[in-house]
Image 1 (tube, rainbow, N blue to C red):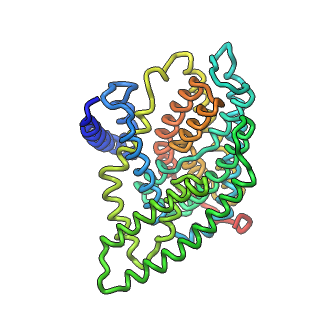
Image 2 (cartoon, helix red, strand yellow; image 1 turned 90 degrees about the horizontal axis):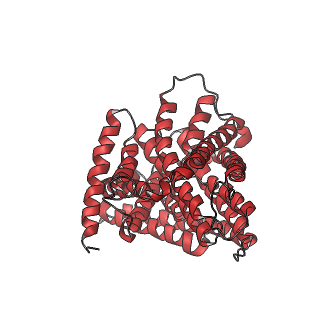
Length: 406
């Protein structure tokens, strides 16, 4: 392969995501939909102009870190505190319902006479793992859509972001429990302890970082460029530490780093603009396109389509119903509950990471993996479209958040 191929790949990705993003906006859809479709169009599934590579994978990984970091910077901490209890209820309901739904679809379709299986574990364990896959939530697409709609700092936006963090923790626990049955060495108490230690360490590191940044801002020699470099370094440190030392998703670490620097005496706005420039021009387009690039012609076999359609429908409905029900229990209005449910639908890179783990452990067949990739792409494209529709609904009288979930 030509050593300069990555330059052409970047050129095609940046141009196609921008052009299709603008086209999507002409049809009153979020620009991120066009970026996702661009990945499908130029990728192996259609034109085959760009193929997944280590360079694009690493760039996409950095892109999602920047996306979650800026979302943390833009989060209203006071609002997030008020939504904390509600976020837990929403996340719990959004895990249990998809878990049952995914298992049910696997029970109906994952049979030798329908799908040939090359996984090394039992069908029962495969189906449980499939349900675990559907519990994952990736809010990076939702974050971008909420930002476009100007709703990232709203009650709904804060609830979604809070629920997504808790959802990630519950997903890690679920994955640990399921993989422990495959012979993988995983201690559930150890995982719980690591997660707890992560948040304790993040709280301490965040408090210290905030004091250091405030001291720097007060100095006469302070420059915004220095703040940006240190902030990005903090983001990468939190992301690395979360995965490497505590087994928590790196995107959670990046989001927590953003929270540590949010509402930083007016500097957070300038910081967000600086980071956003790099993210929106270069990193985010690669991340969004990379999701479409994962789809191949081989994964579009006719035998899989009925299963994919059923799994997609269940993936959408279970998150929508589960999270909406959790929101209603916490006295959000019907409209807000629907928005929260839709905002939690996207599976994105989180489900792909779990699926890769499953196929490596022999708990997921290649057929099921292909189906999961298609479901991830489908939910990722549907989420911004449905989210915009829910925010376009006529406003009705809304009930305030109750104290029962606070």
